[in-house]
Each structure stands twice: as structure tokens, then as C-alpha cells.
Amino acid sequence: MSDGVGPGIPGDEEGHGGDFPQSEPGAPGRLPRRGVIVVGGVLAAAAIGGIAAAVASSSGGSKNNASGGGNGAGDNGANSSPGTSPSPSPSPSPTFPAPVFTTVPADGASGVDPSKPVTVTVANGTITSVQLSGGQETSGTLSDDKSTWTSNGALNLSTSYQLQVQAAGQGGASVSKTVAFSTLKPSATLGVLEMWPGDGMDVGVGQPIRVQFTNYVPQSYRATVEKACVVTTTPAVAGAWHWVAEDTMDWRPQQFWATGTKVGVAFNLAGVRAGAHQFFVKNHTLDFTVRDTDLRLIIDAKAYKATAYQNGKVVRTFPIDTGTNDPRFVTYSGVFAVLGKGNPVEMKGDYGNGDKYDELVNWATQITYSGTYVHAAPWDGEIGHVNSSHGCIHASTTDATWFYNLAHTGDVVQVTGTNKNVSLTNGFGDFGVSWSSWLSGSAYGATIGGKPTNA
Image (cartoon, rainbow, N blue to C red):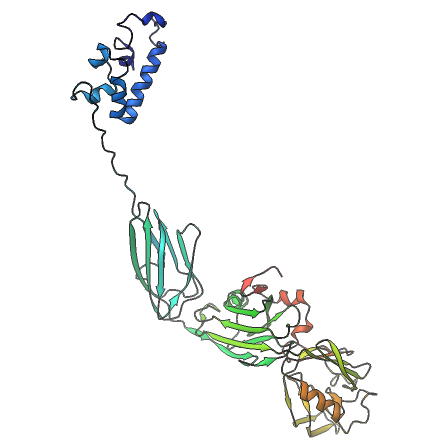
């Protein structure tokens, strides 16, 4: 920087140097104040090229400046005519690294686990397009910064897939890549054995959803299976799956359904792992509607009385009786959903010591798989006074007929006053379980529209 503060400082030749203190002998590091200004001009010249050179040449017109006494910007115009400014030097175009893709699985992979997500990650750019196809398009989720894409749900088994990805680089250029892979062929499969209620049915407010699989599902895989079985409702309501057996799970809301609710279930199970070597192979759907009438029949075994409610209002009371005190015949207590009806229904029993029967019973509404019905019992002279049945709920022909004609699958029958509780698998006793206990039987937890909730 000493070249910028020597003899070429404007003003020295004209005798104005006395206006500023000079460097003291032996102290070369102290610069005149005007020298600071000039040095600043030289640094500016270095920063902005020829434009600064023009400014320096017009800063006083001294001979020292004209002769290029400084080694800064003035050198840039050495070949220029006096008084002209050199052209600015062109700036080089910036360069950016090309986007680089990483995919899981990699190109050419085989035997891929279909239960695991496909991921695409890009460095030096952002993802602009992803297509994953293998007989059908597979959706995915893009991260907020558009650097990662993750597939949704499971893939199909024994299927070849093609993954096409595209990204924009930092300089705007587009880069694409195609990846091919195939999923494994499992050594064991399972599927759906039965679903309740039937597809397209109108049901009562006490009807849960039930799905039974063709094999048991180990505990460690149940959350994944629950997550794949998405329940959506209109209006929206939270609920949860609950494993009532190793191969069976039910879904219900916390309270009884609201009348008129429309329910859809998407069993997105194909490719879902349900064991060390066991995979589901097929998807299923189920749709039903909760009917507009909320019918509930409340049985008080101790009072020998039934009370029927429609949409919260009492519409009928009538006498009944239930099972005897013999432990074999005590009527189950609990909250039941109507399973079906028959008129007549054949009922058989052989309990030894001459306690045997085989009869056709009329106006019979079933509430347990083990054979509990609300039915007409015209032979029973103890109705309303003594519990004398083999476990069924006896009513007069008139009252049993009335209830039979009103009842639909999923309507509620609640029995109180006995010391024998119904199990979840003996029909649908789901709504008799507290909500906290229900959630404890779920591996994934409560959902609303398939999304986790804190309910």
C-alpha cells in the first residue's frame, strides 16, 4: 500500500502537503490522513474494476496521477488514451453442482420388502416430480424443503416397479433418473376371512366394525395392521381398533354411533407384513350406514322388566324373565348389538337329568353367538315374576313380536342385574367396555379419519 501514499498523492506537488502531518522518521506505519482517502480509492478500484479507475483519473488531474504513480486502479487503463475509461471486465458465470439422487431401494434391487417405504433424496437441488408405478400409481409425501419423498402405504408383493424422479438444480437445470426394482414373493400369506357388518347395510347405533383374518397376527405387527385399516366417517368421529382375539379386531367410537353416520373402511392390507414371513396379499373395502332410529332395549333382570327407547324416549315397557340361578343358565349381562332375527328359530338343549328340549321358538331376536335371544315364550307362566329360562329373555308373544318387528342388526340390547358378563367374542359386546380399557387393547391408538388423535 506504500505505492498509494508516496509521491503520487494529489496535492503534494502543489505545496499543500503542509495541510496534513507527515510520517515521522522511523515510523513508516503512520499514514497521512489524505493517504487514507487515496488508499480507500485504490481499494475501491480493486473491487469494481474500470469504473473506479475512471474516478481515480479525475480526482485532481496531477502529473503524478497521469503518470500512473499508483499501482492500483490506474494500471487498468495503461493502454487507454488519456481521459478515457477502460471497459469493465466481464464477470464469470457462476457454476452449480448437478443434483444427485439417492433412492431406497437402489436401481436393480430385487426381493424388496413391500412393507417398507420407498424413499428418494436429492442433494444440490429440489424434487419436482416422482412417479412410482407397478400396475398402479403409488402416492407419496414430499418433505417441506422438497429434498425427500417417501411413499405412502405398502407395495404389492411379487411386483416389478419403476420409479421416475426429476429434480431442479440450484442453477435451474432439470435432472431426471429412472430406477427399477422388484418386491419379494412371500413364503406365507394371510387375508381377510370375514368382515362385519355386511357391505351396504343399515345398522343400529351399537354395531362395531369387525374384521377376522385367516391367521393370527403377532403383537409386534399389530400397530402396522391397524394403521393400514382406515376408518372414515361422516360426520367425523374418533375411534380405535381393539384386538378381541389374536386374529380379530374391532373398531368403535367412544360412544354409540350418531344416527345417520356414514362409515367407510379401507383395508389397505396388500403388502403389509404381519409376521416374520407373513404378508397380506389383498385390499378390501367396507361401507355401511347407521340408521336414523336409535333403538335400545334395556333389560333389568332383577326387576323382570324391559324398557324400550327410541331416539332417547321411552316407547314401551313390558315384563320379562331371564335365566335361572343355575350357573349354567344365568343370562349374560352387558351391552349387546342385535345379531339377527328368526321366526321361528330351532332351539335345542340337553343338560342331563331330563332337562332336555328341542323346540321351534317364534319372534326370536339374537344377541349372542352362544344362543341368547329375546323371544316369545307363551308356555312360561312366570314372565314378570321369576327368572326361569335357560339363559334367554322370555317375553309374551305380543311384546316379543313388537320388538322383533322394530329391531335391526346393530340395535342395542343392554342386560343388567346378573353376575355373568358377556365376552367380546360372544357377539358384539364392544360398547360395554370402558373407553380406557378399549384403548389398552389397541396397538396403534385412537384415530379420526385414519389419522392419530389424542382422544
